[in-house]
Length: 139
Image (cartoon, rainbow, N blue to C red; front, top):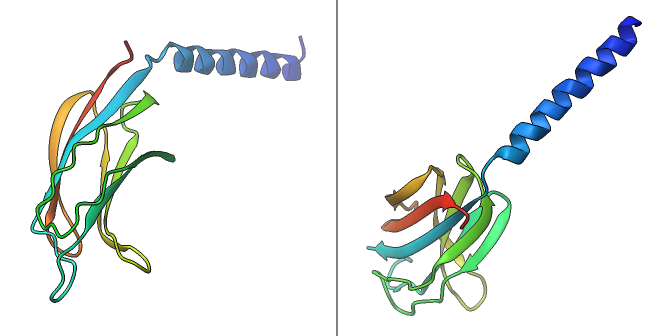
């Protein structure tokens, strides 16, 4: 067997091994829930009309409803992402809804881990976002 044939065989074996490991990885679902904020700041003499956009990796999960004139909103929506993996990036963006364009109040990012977790994130323009998530096997 020539050295190039041996090299090709080794490459095929390596690729097949990686494919098997990837295929054997358990599919999981990420559920993001219990979103609320406190002490949101929209600017001088304004009360924010906040909402949250939810992303996992490059996937967009949707957004919450707008809570008009509310510095301490609590949103009832849940967001689910299928085929999630541990260490995927969860991103939450908090906006103030306006007539012309919406103002970004802050962004929260976190690598997800197995289990159920609760987090607090301090927003760039003031206030905090609180949220929970669960990463578990797909049933």
